[in-house]
Each structure stands twice: as structure tokens, then as C-alpha cells.
Length: 226
Ligand SMILES: NC(=O)c1ccc[n+]([C@@H]2O[C@H](COP(=O)([O-])OP(=O)(O)OC[C@H]3O[C@@H](n4cnc5c(N)ncnc54)[C@H](OP(=O)(O)O)[C@@H]3O)[C@@H](O)[C@H]2O)c1
Image 1 (cartoon, rainbow, N blue to C red):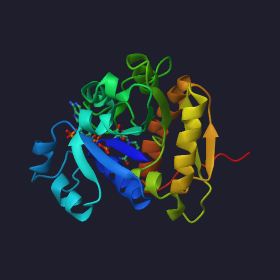
Image 2 (cartoon, rainbow, N blue to C red):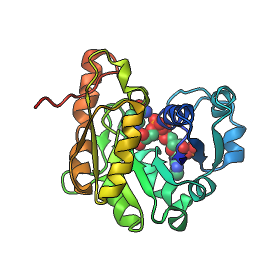
Image 3 (spheres, protein in one colour):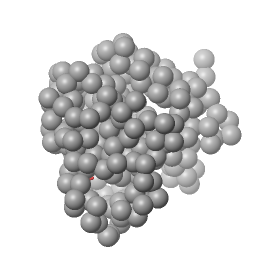
């Protein structure tokens, strides 16, 4: 499948690399590909400058958001939550129309330091905001409840079988995403229903952030036991 991963941060990088390993044709989207290719400083999360990463992953292409989205069959939104709608606007509603957009972003407000708070919650969510802003897109909220390395390699946790949620209005889109998640190794995918379920998965973040501090690692996940 031709996949555009919009986002040059750690989540975009690990997912793009894993999709490429699995044989997909992957392009990472960025605001300005020429500028991103010329970066020499670490990104805002301290990851090595993008060209360093790309040199080790030559099978992953880099393009402006719009070019990446136009060429893709499936698009992943791996941009900062506060910037997701601007990024998808740059990608272009026409380039996204009819496509599955796997939204892994969290609406985190880092402006007051750590821990971040949520920019939207309770009665709305980023997933819903994206669906409303791009009605022609088939948004599936998923993977935002775990660390990036687990998104791409869930099997690294010895216990395995931890839970991955999907939410969205389009059943076929959720099936496509679930199959892709299973190909990554996600074994317990729970369909929470329509995109309003993104409220719950995004509101896990305060608990997730506290657990990270308590456990001293971001490599853990929630397991739903029936
Ligand atoms: N990292 C994790 O472990 C993890 C786990 C769960 C969920 N998530 C979610 O995944 C998303 C990506 O996280 P991340 O840590 O990989 O990267 P990030 O630093 O949150 O986001 C990087 C991306 O945001 C884009 N961006 C920044 N400002 C922008 C603006 N003003 N307009 C348009 N785009 C802009 C950047 O574009 P350029 O490429 O042009 O710089 C870059 O592609 C976030 O929503 C995060 O909450 C991450």
C-alpha cells in the first residue's frame, strides 16, 4: 500500500520505518521538504535532525504534506495535536478526500510545562475536530494511547496482548486500519464505535503521563481484561 505518514517526529519515524519494512511504499510528509532535508539541529523532542534519520532509512521518501497526501492510499496523521488541523490543511482536503486518515495525535497543550493538559476534552476531541474539518476523509483514531515504539512493535512487551483502540464513523476504514495494525503485531484491537470515542482515548493521556512517571518508562500499555 502507498502510505503517507504526515509527521517527522518520533511517532512518524518509527511507523514509517516499520511500514517500509513490511513492504509498503512510504512517504513522510513535512511542511517544507527542502527545509527539513537541510536541518542539522535535533527536533523539538530531542530526536536527531531528520536527515540523520533519513540516511539510515533511504527506503522512506520525504515530501511536502500535500505531495505525500496526494500520492497515498492511506494517510497517517502523526503531527502535533495543536498543529494537526493546520498540517492536514496544508496536505489539502482534495488530496485527502475519500482516504483513510489514521489519526494517532494527542491534543496536548505544552504551553504551561509538564505535564501537558488537553486542548479539547469531555464533549469533543481532536479526532472529531479533524472529522468535522475534513468531512470527506475517513478518520480512524488509533494508537494515541501508547508510546511510539509500541505502536510499531507491540510485541516487544513480553506480556503481549495489550490493547489497541480504534474509533471512527466508517466501518470499512476501521477494518483497513485494524488489518494494518494486526500486520504490525497488535493482537487485541477493540473497536469503540464512532469517532466520538476519541474523547475517551484522548482523555487516557493524563493517566498515561502519570503512569510514565510512576513506572519510569514510556514503554508500557493498557490491557483490557474481560
Ligand atoms: N511520540 C510518541 O511516543 C507519541 C505517542 C502517542 C501519540 N503521539 C502523538 O503523535 C503526534 C506526533 O508526535 P511526535 O512526538 O512524533 O512529533 P511532534 O513533535 O509532536 O510533531 C512533529 C510534526 O508536527 C509538525 N508541525 C509542527 N508544527 C507545525 C505547524 N505549525 N503546522 C503544521 N505542522 C506542524 C512538524 O512538521 P515539520 O515536519 O515540518 O517539522 C512535524 O512533522 C503527536 O500528536 C503526539 O501527541 C506521539
